[in-house]
Image (tube, rainbow, N blue to C red; front, side, top):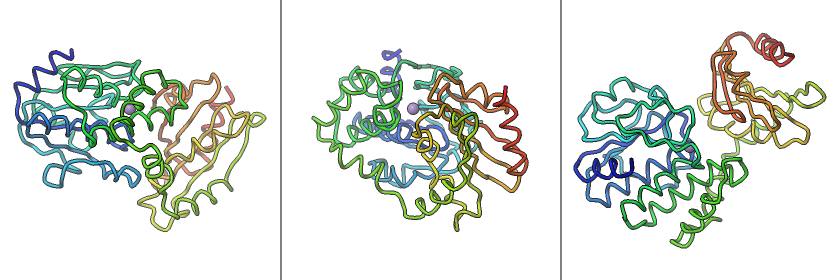
Length: 317
Ligand SMILES: [Mn+2]
């Protein structure tokens, strides 16, 4: 598979790189690293992101504005389109249907639910992150890892393993990050950017959200909610509340943490995290959502009380 991807890179000249909506550190890091990889191979590379880069990842070096497209996919031809960290084509968002006309698709990912939508599929579920797979590819290509590539790889591995706390943390995650620090990445600098650069609004919202905590089943299940009136600027509510559900999960004795987030007047997005043996993707799938055993999500329509009632009915079982 690596050999076939190597041929696509060697034989092509114009490339597009993209990833999923709701950008995370692995998505941004992998895509930007891939951009530098192709650029250093003297190729013409472009990046498409449906969403703006979240504030905590804006320090990552990427392409300049002329090579970075947002919102809508450019309807142009490329020799190869690299789709990174994306379990399914629709997760690219925007006018993703147009992608098949853009060119040959190479799918590089680590989600075990990956649908294999590419013409070439390099899917490695045992990898901690897509950044890890990109690192392997760079080694296979025998390309020198630059500072720009190193900080993107490091951030991808760091964030997708939850700072080496999640079950996908493997020996390779540590060894890759050790190598990136040898190249020049400063862990304290990255940690400060990713974890300690939140806007103050986030903390005002957090205070309100913590006041909504409700415990069920002897504290095994804890639910909190965020409504749009909790923020002055509800457009950024999603970005400002990112990570709250993980924070709630830190409470001792919790098996499932849930954050109910208002999206529209009568539409809520539920994020669930499991710390015990419970499979939250099973609960979310009842509502048409999905994800992983320990981290999943879904959307439920109705007012807040109705949404809670629907969730509690399912949890009872
Ligand atoms: Mn990932």
